[in-house]
Amino acid sequence: MKIERDIKIIEAILFASSEPVSEDDLREKITNKNNFNEYLINIQKFYEVRGINLIKTGSKWSFRTSSDLIDDLTIFKQQKRKLSRAALETLAIIAYHQPITRSEIENIRGVQMGRGSIDHLLEIGWIKPGARKNIPGKPTLWSTTDIFLEHFGLENLSNLPNKDELKASGFLDKRAAIATISDLANKVTEDAEILEEDNNEEENLEDFISN
Image 1: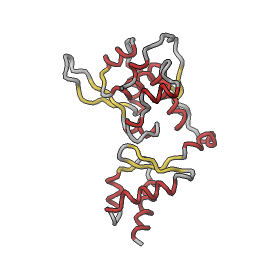
Image 2: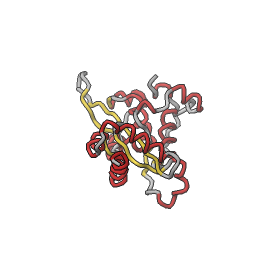
Image 3: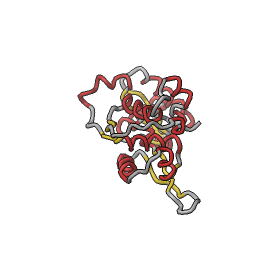
Image 4: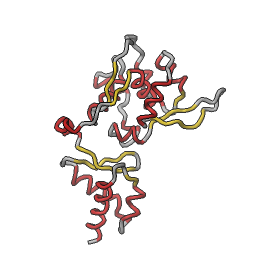
């Protein structure tokens, strides 16, 4: 049957790809294009109780290990990627306030930042430069990437915990957004490790989060 073949095609493409596949690319390969969304829903339901899940990131799809099995796969974990506290703070601020300029990041953190944090996040692929803000000096605006969404298991930015959710979970006492990003990282792949710095100042963490 064509329907069964279309589902097999979608599964085969996703299994064969090392990167998330766009909906346009998947739809192009099947016969019954009008049933595309139904196929994805059926595949997602089929795998939701299995060792791998069908995950949507932005407009792309991929198979990923079920999050509740992470602890059982410790021998397969990749080497941890170390992030400084400054880099993690920078990532949290960009995630909640994007698009945002470097000086705006510094204003929220309350300290000047070197190139290291931005360069590291760029190298990992979690942030990207965008347009320039129409103010004197025309500074670059920074935002997160689809790789960021994929790594933290988010379909889109609206899935980031909001202020009320953080308060309810007890995160909004100190370093809430940072704790949230770190917690997401540990739950999904546990390959981001914070390097503690001599930085004991406390910020107003509600400033880290968009209302």
